[in-house]
Length: 321
Image (cartoon, helix red, strand yellow):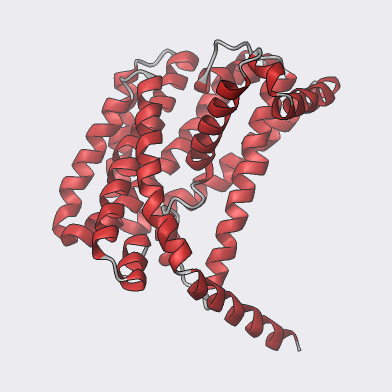
């Protein structure tokens, strides 16, 4: 069984077992527990709005589907995520493009709104510039981390089990995935919200996205977002469960896996019932905790990464000659 992740490169690369343990505990709580509460909360909220499904029922369904995948091991986890993600990302981008192009006259005003808010804080904050900038940075960093996980130390668990000739290949793949997630999928969501005029200052979360798509696609828009979110969020639940499992194995060996699975399923059900603001606040706090030890490792092992990249580039040059 191939395994890896920050706990291993912190303990073996930096030689700090205590820091590795701190990271493992943080990611188990941040993603396996709290993070998956956010995902189930979003799914339950979307399906309550779109199909009037009670949150508890939706939570139990998600937990049951999750258990089916969790107990199937890494093979089933990979099979589910590799099929779900590309298909739903493509459908979501197509739907978003349709809405944006249908409101093409609002594209320029949307970009103007973005730039005015970024470079003229007083226009966006009503004069309380310091507080406005502080809040923008706080939520910008928090949501950026939550969306693409860059630097948090979560996705290295997936890259570690990939079969490649050079480690740098997975490093480059990680960069590409951040670009696709942030600059393609998330910017599409932002544009849809701006061009449809859905941003009213009161509607937040998945309800805001559903409102925007319902403006562009009619009543079907609410259902479209709910279905897309189900696949996006469920694949995230599966991935985050796996990341946590790798750290459970690091701390306790395989004997800790079954209890961890049961705990994750309980948190999934709990997440579907909680208020969205509380869930997000908890997620932000634990995401920050797990990021710090990984950032220390990234700085400390920068020379190792540079060496791996040099080896890959030299091999590519030799192959192209």
